[in-house]
Length: 476
Image (cartoon, rainbow, N blue to C red; front, side):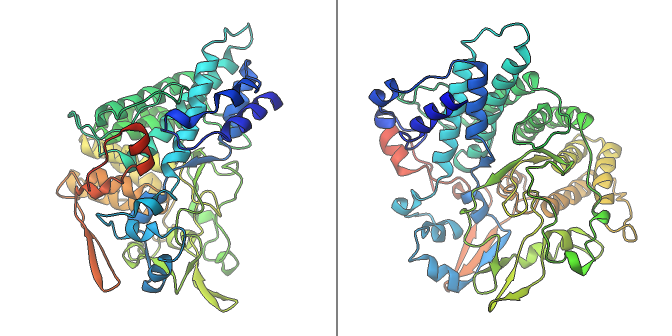
């Protein structure tokens, strides 16, 4: 354990951006470092570098429509180190690329992919002894999952939405630990196929989940859930439903929000879920969080800084317990009046992992799209029965596929608020005219619009990556 950590702490000091070539590694320094060579070493590498799990969601969350910043805060941003968020917030065609380098979504994800690649390369060189097969499988499956998870989230920000054409605006797919290799961008289809291949390999290798102390290490249910999400984006709804079936068959428990005491004044200001890496949350499959620095003020939404989008808050009808479990009322503290989102499955951080509630909604959507109305209603109502006050609950009976799908997507927006999924939903649903939306922000006396299928739904690659790797830039 100590040997592998020393190796990778030293190696991390040589990292710049995950996609760079040339000067990415100091070869002389590497020669003086001890190299991991056992199954336990490679497991330690994965554990050390993915605790807690993290995901790149800064750009997507700031670009979506779940919260608004004030004009005062927008002005303040101009003199701060994250001033690039002004351009992100207004979907500017011209982003200040020098300041944009402050964002770490791209670099942190590629560093994580490097560690996954190194573990895969190393474990493939080990022939497990009798009794070591399960440990060997866990390392290999975990590394495949981590690589798939990081590439999946990168694709939602830096690759174009999925299509089966030869759209060249995919990701540069690094599948080897040699970071000096020059890797060009793949097509969008190739990007998603690679992510799917990794997720499916992880699902074959990882053990079925038993209750454990945390869910930072992924198990089979996490890999199955990720595969279902990938199939959803690829429009393969029957396959997405199949993998959701397999996932929920292993573990499909939901929290009954009726038991959370949301109406008790004592709980008004308490975070609804524990910060214990999913240990006490039966819904969590894989625990991951976004960078706490991703937002201008998401965790403490001060009145003079930002606010939840009122259009979002208006979606919660009387009797919907989520409105009280997720959002804390305004409170005055030290002269500040603020409102806090308290419904994250990671408590103080933004949960961006995988959980059962998403899988029920995913499967309900896929069943509605493929005409299995009874199954779709069963999944939707099972979720709502655990989210709506008992006295207010009545099952959804809508059998028109289009209207039912609309209801499911609405519940998806209300259920998975601030998980980083809103941006990816907007991107995929904009391809369907009946669900396409135009986002609008008015700030600084100007009106800013983001039209459906606009190229600005895909963020620019960092300029350093363009310069170092000769990559093509995303159009805006």
